Image (cartoon, helix red, strand yellow):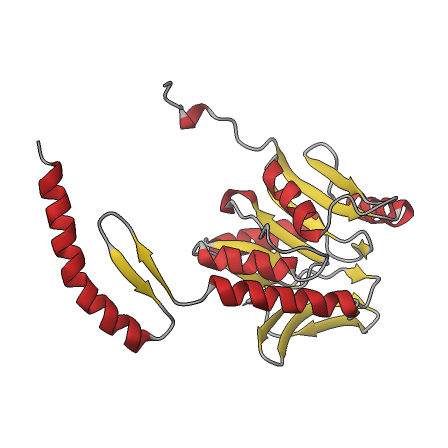
Length: 264
């Protein structure tokens, strides 16, 4: 088997890949033009779309996963076809990224709207709910972002759940995956216009139910067993400490006997 020379692998050729699910070509053209006017030139930026104009070939989860797998640029901009850059552009976004790289090198995803705590939001956007909304002291860490505009570091190696579907809550899923990898997510001061107020229809509530069900299973207390360790994972620190302290002795003995058995 040949050894892989990591140093010889070429990195991304572009600074930004702007990625969009499209079902309205006119909307997408106007979005793209607003990015070009605001500094996202085609010399080292690319515009990639998934064609959903005749049918939904890929939904939010499968489509964004396709974009995340490309990694042809240093940063992915995942955005809706109905966003428009109006004030801030590439220079402002790069300044924000430079600031975040210094402030928190572990960041993985940036957005312009997100939840901070139950009933508390951070927002920097113009949309049908209001012009030039600015809520919260930005940047601020978040546990769930809005999907209209996301900036993702490709070196964070993120992906979305393959057991969820639809067009809602994939940004929240992305943030949870980032946190599980030890990464962070932020709402930042990047202003743009979103033409849609969002949809709270039946598909949204089905998505909420599926999301809650999936993470109830994913975060359920469980045993993790390896050839040399037995661990109990739970959010209950008292139960976890009790079980794992007792298991620690058995695990150490088990690991010692395994190591002894493997000695020549």
